Image (cartoon, rainbow, N blue to C red):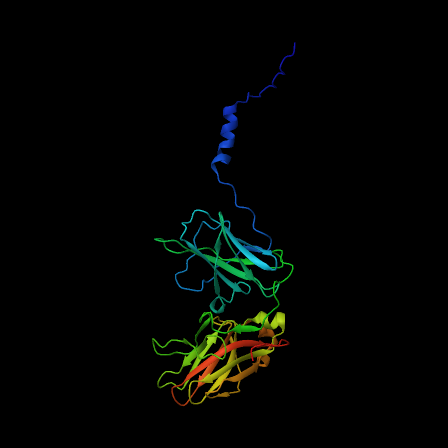
Length: 325
């Protein structure tokens, strides 16, 4: 007759109760978030958000990630519990982490799927990193912001770019994001858009305040990687006054807003009148060691009386032909 084997000395009988107790922690704990794709990680250190009051949440964004798909970077977030009228917006900036006082940020809404939110973002080069975070808004609740992440397209699996690089930087059809006063102006004296554009629907209107002969505006849409990766030689735009005469001067800033800031001024003063005029300048004044650190461009306008100067179609100069003339 078959007998069950004897247990060794010191062994204890097992029971289903003991097995269930051992499994209980696994049954109660939620499944861990899947690993993020290679090349996508949380930004280290203390990044600075683009607007005051943007404080990142400490939880709820473990599934936020970015990966390269079909020539674009796809940002996704697994979150099905939001109400149907909630909105999720991606804030994204093309540059390596850093340059926090002088980054160019864009916003793009995410699309809701059954269990996720996602959006695809085109990138100009496999070696230009994407820094990004989410802004989540639900009725009756304060907006929540995710911690920042950075995705390196080549490491994240992107093998090609969906569209060729285009040197056009700003036509103001999307508003005045990434443009600001660079000189002190009276309170309430704001930059504005004007419908008298060189082409398209809008131009930037820079109005000199009364008693001021000179003002300057700044933009962060021109980046050092434009010079390093695409060999951009300079900048061009179209400018005019609404009436009368004025002059325009360029300046370039590397590491803007930091203790390492360097300013490189172009001495040429370009004359403006009430006709649209193409204005061009080269990056030659920037020493080679600072070219990759470029993050701010300023345009100074001067006149002998209060004038309004219009600017449109900022673009890079290089080996490209821009079909906007």
